[in-house]
Image 1 (cartoon, one colour):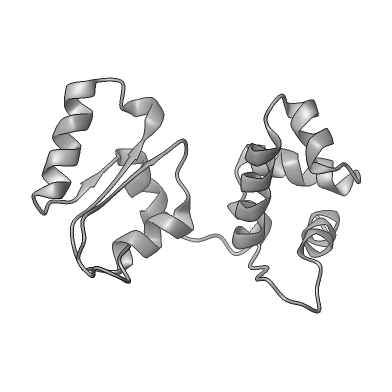
Image 2: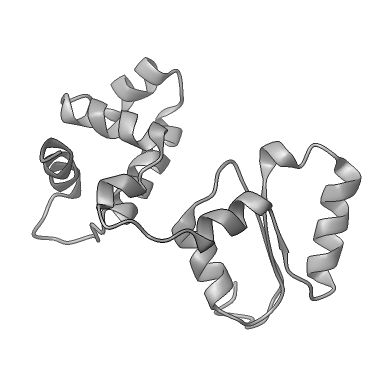
Length: 144
């Protein structure tokens, strides 16, 4: 959206803090932004107030988003993973499919795919025709 309309207000509502997305959102420096966590937006009036403030040009950030973005980036890529991502990567290392991982964790395959994409991002594994990111992620895990 920002490519088509620079400065367009953006409000992100997420289950957890995705550091890469938060940094990119804030780094643009153009237009109002908001990043709120779903579990903290239980008060509808507070949520609506946040949306209105972003629409009016303000920045609205969940305190956890601020803490995550301001935290020093760790040297070890595996340290960037959330506990759930580490669990998913461990199951990948066992050779399990996305469906099997989802069944083991009682989540959907779509949720597993999101975790895996986040793992690839945090481990700095871009899409590459010559490399298999899933294998490279597992190799990084096994080096621990």
